[in-house]
Image (tube, rainbow, N blue to C red; front, top):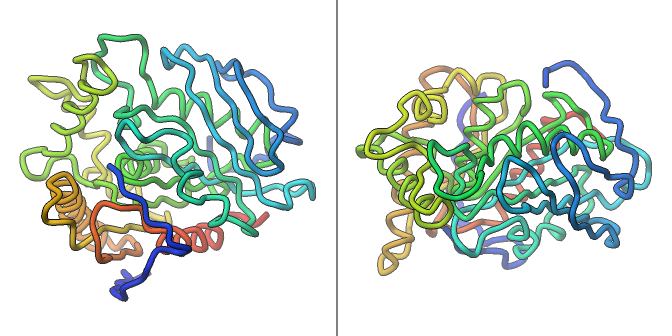
Length: 326
């Protein structure tokens, strides 16, 4: 598949523009209804709300994370039909205003209305970087373990999903876009589609600016001085394993979707630094994919470090077309 460049200026759907910062074999999941959700896979439910017909909320106690992380599970409107559905794991960005509720605030129910897919939106920490950190001066913050080893099989056990490669997509915004690219490559057999919306794709460019930011932000917001990748010396093997630009072959035979902004707010230093780095990193990543003959769809859009509802809607249609049908 050839790269697709879409340069038309589009407004976010419905006014939705928000700022920041298992093997491949077919396995049918055993979950029947959302109300049947129970403990398992290292997760103990300590709070829940299943009253809404589509949005189910759970909070877990887990040894992987030292506080009780939450997850929203958004079901298709016809979930009670008894069908099985593909699943999108949708990862939020970094910052003290970002958590598992972020995408609900941004209109995820409207964006997915009538679409046959389950959307799982977990906590990932204010600056967890979808990683198990090299060091922590607080209790456990092993987000990678929570998401991959615990939450993913819990979802398959408690909801009617396809527990297979062609049954799952992963996507995210900003830090979550990086997390999606990382998880899709590192756990190749788990996800057939991966999307990064203003997500960084290169850990080593510009003297490792994104890696330094991951260390600094995690130290300040999540780890009380601990870091994701280590200071003053990085855990080089971990950086290599997490860096999308060093895992190019791991994207072969996947659907890859990338979005970056081209015109960040010049008076907003955070917006400018973030999206300038995102755009440069995605261009580097895209060039490597192209040189390897790996198909991908990319979009450079006006604006800065924002979640674009119209691009997500387009992305969602592509995911559903790629994944196993409900």
